[in-house]
Image (spheres, helix red, strand yellow):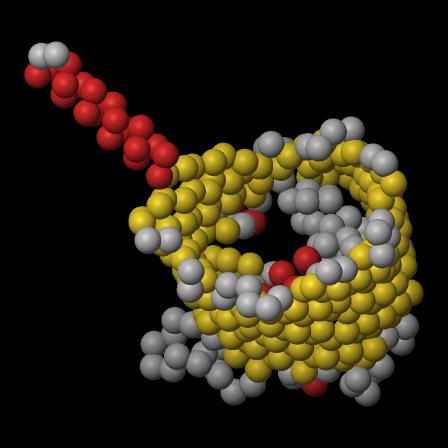
Length: 331
């Protein structure tokens, strides 16, 4: 074998090794459908909307094996509107997620624009609709604290069913690191059919003279095939933010079908007593593992001048009633 052949063989071997140790994936969701909203001050409106069950997105994620059980990870996720082709998230390129970090036996540390531990608790543990999915989402009444910029997050490994998630996002204000700062965390336990998680999120105001605090406990229990959900949140902050929120829900899969039900209550602890109640129902039919058709309806009973609206994954809504009919494809 001549030197050229040997060199090419070594180069090929090195390239194969590098490819085996690194991976980059492209993924996304295209979600669009019909939204009919009513009960708003301007009357009923019918839209062809994007991101009803899930925000439409294009994402890139990667992992590189650094040896010794350590790996580098990253995630970049852009939002778009399937009905118009325009960028979502206010035009921010990777407004859904943008982070880089390290993953190992110690857990994972990531830095960037990320989902908060509080939001992930409500989305993954405490709501059959997934916190911000379709008309019945708990996010119509619950605080969601969905994302934070400049966030440093640590997620621990699972130990005896327990996992911790801690987050810190500085406000990056000169002269006072507390201004506009966000702090959060969660601790959860999962064993057999039971999953339960406690989460907290705190946001300092721009002058660091006041703060909003949201504390949440969420749980679900799988009875096979039915899963029941419950969430309870206590909200504190400026007087208008003091409240308690409750959710009870159920997910019933059967074959390629799934039924979702939830009831959400918002109890205002201020003198205004702006209480609200929401009832939501949805039916999801899976044409394949990647494609589903869904239909959902929710109504909010606002009391004492409350003005909560029925939204969906990317729309805050215009009225106290909404009907959704859509198609979602994952790739």
